[in-house]
Length: 343
Image (tube, rainbow, N blue to C red; front, side, top):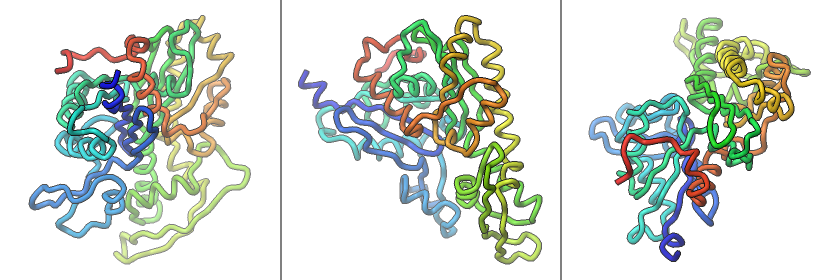
């Protein structure tokens, strides 16, 4: 008992945009961007998390800010390992004595090779026992949904790199769709729209700001507008433009339509008994990108189902992961099978 008290159990959401770490008995201790800044010549890490994100698109030649997660999975193994090590060390009280156990939320469409990469990087970062759980399942548990009951629940988790759609019942995912489209693709759509329409080049961070300030998926009662600064691709000098939420809605239409198409496919694959449950309870939306204005309304229109966006959608996966590690016996059926046992 003393051992489990001293060993900090962790619930980790290793996201494309942000990494969150919940610690048993201490709450949410890490919520930082999944960004690592390195010195290009030496490959030495200069900054991690918030400090590194501030450098995105602004670094001098010799420093590069990298996002080591792409579409919800590891793109750069070494950097993810260093990032995890840094965050885990920050939350470890007794790190010299006890290595923690962790449950990590990952996309449901993850491959065996990608699973292995997540487990290996967590073990190298000092975690003694690693378990993986699909993000929609972790989200549902984080929201307090009784996933062990026979009644069906549909969860849509839209993060930075993926949109995960799953119908959950009896500790399992009855049907699930994972599309590698999320907040990042929305940002990229804004960048390419401004480039094509106005010959204006903006960076990732500016595109994200535009999405947050005036982005929408459904017509707004009062349309919004904002001033955008970027580089004129023709003249090569800085330029300022005013753009409207109507334009940005057009820019975002493609990634949003892809997500909605995946939701419809998941509904088509759902057994009729569970469809009846979803009709009663509606669809639950979670994940940072679910907060896009009017996305719930657009889903309602396209599916004719009630849609609810939950409070604190960003922290659900990490909260659920911690609940699982705190009661591993009860929740073991929801964990993803791994190719081999943990060391």
